[in-house]
Amino acid sequence: MMSINLDYETEKYLVAILAKENTTSSELIERLLREYLESIQPKKGFFERLLSS
Image (cartoon, rainbow, N blue to C red; front, side, top):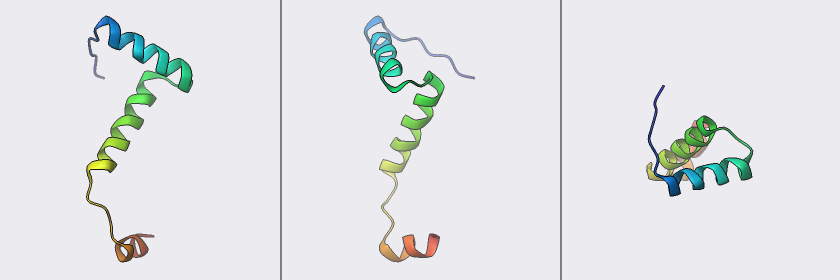
């Protein structure tokens, strides 16, 4: 488990996002990290995607 300290403004953003997305902070962080990691990975070419299916 990890804990973080957020400033007041950032905590307000988090609360608003959690309410809008109807999710937990853990689920949101997991999704954001997964999406970020995917965005920085090199894109697979057509044949790589075809072979990995």
